[in-house]
Image 1: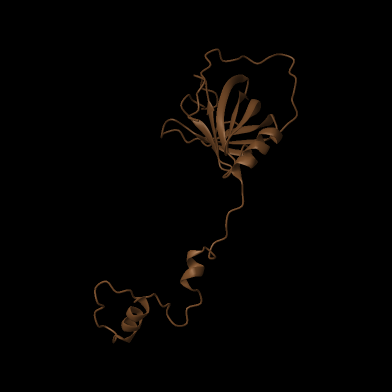
Image 2: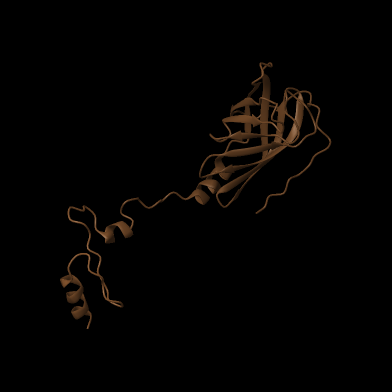
Length: 191
């Protein structure tokens, strides 16, 4: 029955209506390089072999725990020395949860953030009610190159922000401890 319908459909002149219930096969246009099967099987785009969860687990093991650098406000303020000490680095799927303390100038404040192992995007929140070098509660650092280079995203539109540049550093034992912020807040993740 099917060969008869196909023969009937192919014998119809162009532009004539196809009978109801009949089947008209797909014929690719002449000169087409690819057939419908190769297009549907995905040969146009390669299969992704990158495993972000495995990279997150590797980052949690190998990421340096101590970073040092500077923070430079965009409004022309003075550059401030910064040290980041990560107490915990934990992988959750393709995300890496980082928690620790950041020393900005002479003030130590707790920080908490997430690093996406697939895109190297970092969101780092400063958890203090302080105003050091323009860093305010409600803002955070946004890095598109991991921890190395980040920008301050202020909680107010009128704040120009700033740039944080960090490099891995060896742990430094200080002689006099810096003043610590007493009001510590912990932000729980959604996962």
